[in-house]
Image (cartoon, rainbow, N blue to C red):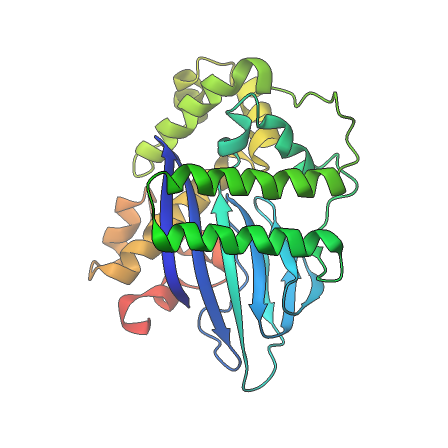
Length: 288
């Protein structure tokens, strides 16, 4: 469960989600394999167990750092009986980086070409203590919300990403991510269009047209920069919106399906199983 959650708006359509979570042993609800469009970095503050990421087990204990790139299936498990794992988590869409010319190089760590990419930085690694310190500074900024805290959170996150890229990237410094230099603005428009029309019928023709790009090239650049295919992105966003409605309203499942852009209940259930491994009922208001 999430003890606290703050969505920090950096600019229109670009946010950083910072939340504190606690997962108890023996509590199966909330522990399920899932994946999302965002990048997520987490600090284990208390407890021990294991993270399963892309089918690989990563034991975790206090001050370990866990990193999920876009579309990486993951879940917590093996929590010691009678204990709980407490974590600080920061989540953001890749667009926060690649849409900014000065920050786009920070995407290098998350690129498939990076042979040094890791999902876990052990507490015994010297950079883990520095990242932990930055996490705690972010928490302090979010808790106090002094003037300009949004900029401070972004700056501290950039510091974390610089440290990670310095330590774990095999990509040459002069490497240019395909599509960043001359298509980032068009792709940004397309993402805004998708997010604002997620409940409507979306086709590759319509989306590529919103970006004023060739369909094939658009699809290639989209996956390269976001780490996920266009249709997987749309499906996950629709499921995320549906989960929020299931948790907060009494709408029927078929009404929620229609509000989230699914054209049939069969596709609605299929998408949930694919993204979360669960049926929609798992997330309904009465079960939370």
